[in-house]
Length: 163
Image (cartoon, one colour):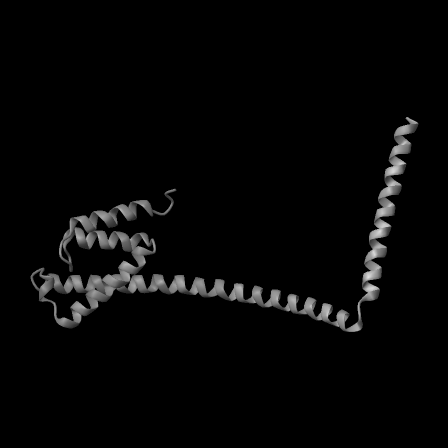
């Protein structure tokens, strides 16, 4: 109908007029800017772009460090586990008594337990199981079924794939 077309044409003209006013207003503001203001604006834009590039570079670097740290944590856990296995063999060779290990072996055992504890507290499933096992059996530590139960529970909750 004619009135609908007229309304549409009128709305279009109003929109175009508002757009022209906005553009003219922007152009006037830009004309009023001094050369120093232009330079400051472009310098600020360059600075923002440079900071974005630096933030992106740092984010990439952080991701690489996190991956390296995860890899190192696994290597540390694996080394602690090998050390514990060696100490367990020594204890077995000495009548199964952990107290028969020498002072340096007890020091190593304490380091292993600290590594496992740190990993277990951060949700490392295998470290939680390792702690649960040593506390359950009293292998290198005083047997503590309550502590063993705690670590078995944590391990069950953090089991990979369980969600």
